Length: 461
Ligand code: 4AD
Ligand code: MG
Image (tube, rainbow, N blue to C red; front, side, top):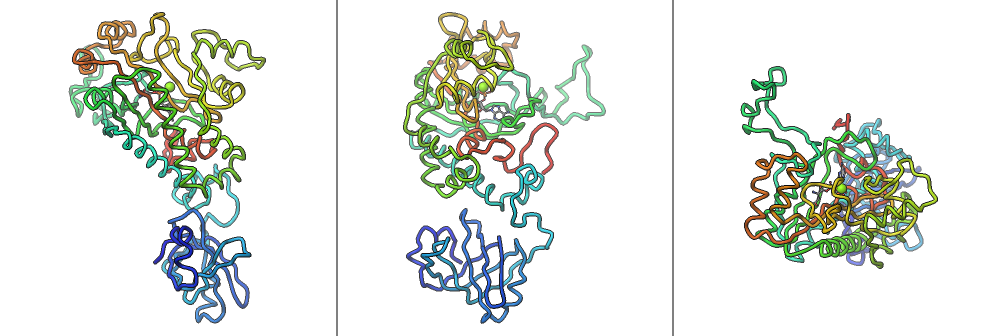
């Protein structure tokens, strides 16, 4: 069988030829003498129209085929220059491969995204989700392509780890201990020596620490894999299981880091706009009317770069009432981030040099001793898309930082080792992959860009 994508891309090759396609029925309407079937074969976002006429021996049967049935169609591809679709197949044979019950929930009408979440196993068959998950796949490819073309080494960091990269304690524990009979120490703590790995372990929140080890061997690396956070925040931007892409570059500082992030994002956007133009057009029409213009702007303009201190000044001067009042030292809330990027700059903004007290232990302390060489990239519609920093490469400073935060030096022994043996300056960042997909599609809820999303109290599939 020919794939529908190939028919759309190389139409000339197939016009007036006899072809066979297979796919699923999206819609079917028929009259006494003829009928139309819209078929989607999975290879392409768009359907292909099939016309069948009463000269077919099973004409009556075909007329009764149900939505979602799988069929094989043989016929001639004819150009239809005056119709909505550029061509159609005039069927000479239509056979049923697998039928579908009449109670199929995705009948042709608009469904809400909330409803479609309850049928996560069927929603990839809808137009919107067919587009979302095609873009998701393509974006992953674009990421690999960007970094591989620049000679970065792809590192598979562990999913099960013994360290808490962000030091935020928001981890899912990995354990084989019997919950009904947990072994305890004399001091009243859980005896993890009896656990599977002989110590406390958890699902990774970030591959960064391991990524740093590899950057100090390969210079430029990236990780790309699932990460897990037991944050109990039920928002449209947080998932408990999400994918993160984390480059780490040696002999590099915060500016190099921002340059890389900006180049990467522009590359990904251009690549997706070029290779998923039908999908992006669909999003622009039905999901977010400003999408195309916004993406074009991002590709063609420089991102803004401001310090946290400047951001606070902007927010203090704003004539807008925020739910959370701002003052130097506070963490930026989504409302603040969105104000800066959506109302002030109207484009992506790097915010740098955050107070050390609101950032992770591994970030490099600036000369003022109050701020760290951190960067967050804020984008319209999403807020924080990227979080990164230059890393603290000075062993003594890092050790006193761990101490200051009450973290156990022994737990980080190998990480500290990296500073002892050629620990050159280095930097990196994490791109929230789902947030990138939201940004590229205009989809406003993270649950709608993950095939089977996991969020608090929700892991149905
Ligand atoms: O800012 P975060 O926490 O940074 C790190 O984890 C660093 N170790 C990255 C690094 O420097 N290598 O997370 C990075 C990004 C965020 O900017 C956000 O886009 C995304 O990951 N993110 C989430 N996405 C979905 N659901 C969540 N619960 C997320 N938490 C973070
Ligand atoms: Mg962050």
